[in-house]
Image 1 (cartoon, rainbow, N blue to C red):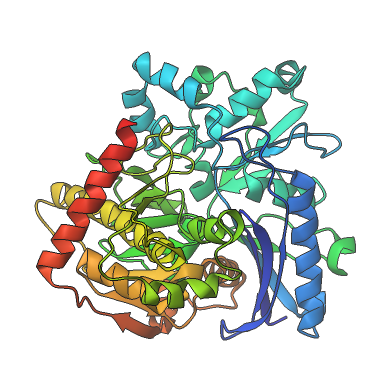
Image 2: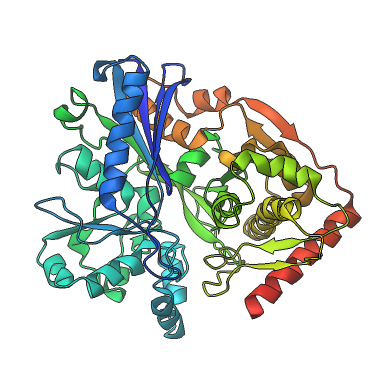
Amino acid sequence: MSHILAIDQGTTSSRAILFDAQMKIVATAQEEFEQHYPASGWVEHDPSDLWSTTAGTCRAVIERAGLTAADITAIGITNQRETTVVWDKSTGQPIHNAIVWQDRRTSDTCAALREAGHEPMVTDRTGLLLDPYFSGTKLKWILDHVEGARARAEAGELLFGTVDSFLIWKLTGGAVHATDATNAARTLLYDIRKGRWSRTMCDLLEIPIQMLPEVRDCAADYGVTRADLFGREIPISGVAGDQQAATVGQACFAPGMMKSTYGTGCFALLNTGDAPVVSHNRLLTTIAYQLDGKPTYALEGSIFIAGAVVQWLRDGLKIIRDAKETQPLAEAADPQQDVILVPAFTGLGAPYWNADCRGAIYGLSRNSGPAEFARAALESVGFQTLDLLEAMRADWADATSGQTAEGVLRVDGGMSASDWAMQFLSDIIGAPVDRPEVLETTALGAAWLAGMQAGLYPDMDGFAKEWALERRFAPAMDDATRNAKTARWKSAVQATMSV
């Protein structure tokens, strides 16, 4: 038993990755699943797809590695956060499709709560803002719109969970209904200071508190898998939401360290240590990880559209067939054109939090074509990251009497493999960008949590020493060009939000 199985259940696919005793990747399996768009701004997943692709990739990766369940010490889980599932406590059957984190159907509910003056209290308890992004209003919507759901929930017949909780329930055959502190902190229902579910928030959103899972540390006992799934029972020993798992995988354990993950969206986190930092720039205060009952906090900025903008080029505009084509296209773009894409396809996240605006393109000319669109798409991710980092640096300086956050940004996720995108990112933020040898940092974080809990992997200090740099991108853009580009971006964002 010298391997860790990491489950990485994401927004567009489920993956299983096997790590050996040296935390090296042995094998990977991945399976995409269907996205459902029942109305404009609505995004759903069939929970059975989440489960079947997770179980299927786990079996596939074990077989691909030539191993058996007897070779696996423990399982670590990382997951798309905020996505909301409600299921029958007796049968395990969901009562509605999972409502995905990108879904905006509860915009009016959030606006009404803001207008009623609730947001300061919500932010004080949860560290979050009243936005459709989070699980609480999604759960309220299901209880309000599925016939009989509220009465059944109040009678104790229904359970709520983010995707990690749903997978734990399925893996353990219904023996464990639990989540970790990082996922709980994204629900709009968890008091991040007191470390427990907030009855005040549950009452505000009319959520029966008995629906909610038990909250545990990121490295903890989450039960064992059903023996019939993989051939024997396997302990589940680590859980963290995907961005927190990436923070762990990047070994951002010291206050002031920052990481940014580029998947479907982009999520930047700044470790703020053992005290939650209140943002004055509409960032989120959240839990980075919790070990031995002690939470470590973070400031987080969330961008809804990062890698998804490349998917739009491929599936929407059909100007590329593969994501790898964006880099040569961007390199070939006319340098005299300055096309700006604001990818507000599902609204804008931090620091704007505008759920109603939609995407826009500025600066088009008769000669604008696929190359210019590709460059604008990649640049939009850099510009959005700049917005986040400026807000983070300001909040950190306020909280630490003028201290500056660490200048280096650690990056991971699919888009971080693009040299062009990472060089532009370094240029536009005016700081070094470090890309690690292991880009699968989200899965690595989940694996380390499980392996450390199981006694296979080193402690935090030992793990941090294992982090290895693959390449550093240093800023090469002159200040005048950077300032001009940044000014055009900020002007484009304001124009987009004013429409």
